Length: 426
Image 1 (cartoon, rainbow, N blue to C red):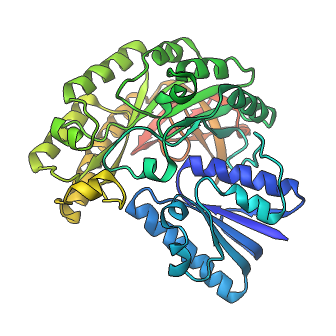
Image 2: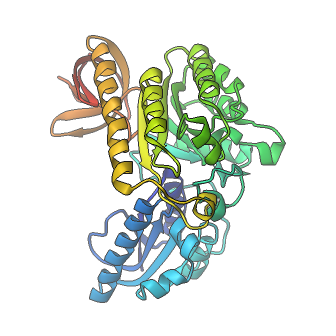
């Protein structure tokens, strides 16, 4: 038997895939991951249903595998993940080549169907470059954001016990991982459900104490009720990257209230100032949403001004899409035309591109510590602590000597090239 798995969506999905792959592999079954290059007895697609683009991508990928099944390249087509959770067996009615639909939390049934009945441990089949991995610290979310379907699909916050996470980190380090990306739908609420208090600062401290952990990077913090003790840990621990990924979505008070994220522009600015003052040199990554119901031209201009003022070192932009089952889908009218949403998104990213050029140009001539991700066409692709894999600016490095992937090097920045930079290894 051969089982093939392909993942679409977030890195939390990827962790599920890695656990699934490891468990199947331990049964002596041949596995493959990513794009299918030959044939398979069972193809499993881990889907995403967070926004319309993710749904469209999931359907396109499933449809491609349905064609492979009709051709005889695969025998069985199974679907798991958020879109499977959202659609259920209706998905198999839409695409009849699907043999079985699993949701987010019953995918362990996949293993039972294949023949494994033992519990899954912390081990995983790492699909990222071997020097970094994602550590999913919780499932679900208990925040009521109007646009978000995740609490409907994934349920309320369910933190992974700290001891299990520590065990998992030690196992990952034993496999050669030195860089950890902590991920959760709401990272900063970690521990509330288990311990009655936010324990993210304690968790990061304990992970930082594990020998072999060189870099820890934090993804998907939530601004309301931000646990400020985490800032002390980030400042004091040298292996906690000066990097924080925190989606703000907007700055206009009315839009934030409609989003059910009741903060003001002033309170957001105060929080951002506290973060920067508490952790000198920190890079902030945020995500913003344009085209939310009720967003006027004036509100959007206010958001543009906020972005120019705050100078986020890293930023992404989403266009609002009404997700069936979300609060906004049931209670608001999608008033902003799609072409206006797209135009606003491009406008914000044009502002960000200008800042990337300014920020990267200021680094020319400076020496930076980087991790080597890979070598392509004789050039080394590297990152500083201020860049997460795949999403953020990289440094393309020339070196007169071979550089090992996963190694840390000192590099002098020689040129800013749009979002990215060039450098020379010292």
